Structures are given as C-alpha cells and as structure tokens.
Length: 114
Image 1 (cartoon, rainbow, N blue to C red):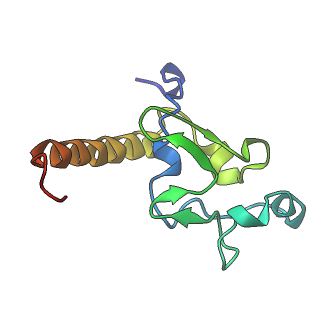
Image 2 (cartoon, rainbow, N blue to C red; image 1 turned 90 degrees about the vertical axis):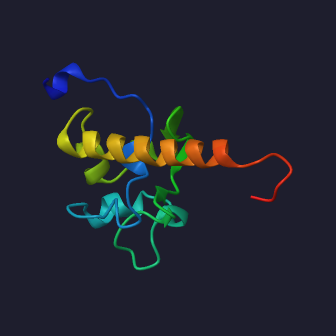
C-alpha cells in the first residue's frame, strides 16, 4: 500500500513515540523563535516531552489529538507523513501500549488497590 493511500488518523502515535523525538534539525533561528518556549526542551534540542509524549500534543492518544503549535511545528513534524514507515512503526507501538494498558486494567480486581 502506498503512503498516499493513508489518511492521518489523528491518533497521536507520531507525537507520542519517544522522549527523544521530535528533535530540531534544519530549522532556522527565526523558525525556532516562533515555537513558544514552554514547548521547547531545556537543552533546546527539540520539543519538550513528558514521558514519550510531546507537550504540544493535546487530546486522547488513540482517539483524536491535535497540535497546539501546528502552524509553527518543527520540520521533523512537517515531514511526518501518514503511512510512511515511521508512521506505521509509531502506530504499531501505540497499539501495543494501548493493548497492554487495557489488558492490565481488565486484570485488576474491583476493590483492590491498583
């Protein structure tokens, strides 16, 4: 299947893949200055993440998300294409994470501490 055959699912997988991503690469100083400081990592190397999730991401992973800085997002985010290898890898990882979470929740006994 070609990447053109995929639509973005707005699942957030690409923005919740790694605490090391997204990294800045080819942005000009002018472009970087447009990104609000609250969303930039302390070492200025990329977007700030909490766990594996970019802090600019809002919404519920796996359901529907959006980017708070979509208009000024980094190049690596602009280059992310629905259905490309990175997208598919991120979707697979998100699916595994959600399944593990659901499986763990199903095994908890009501009334017992989790």
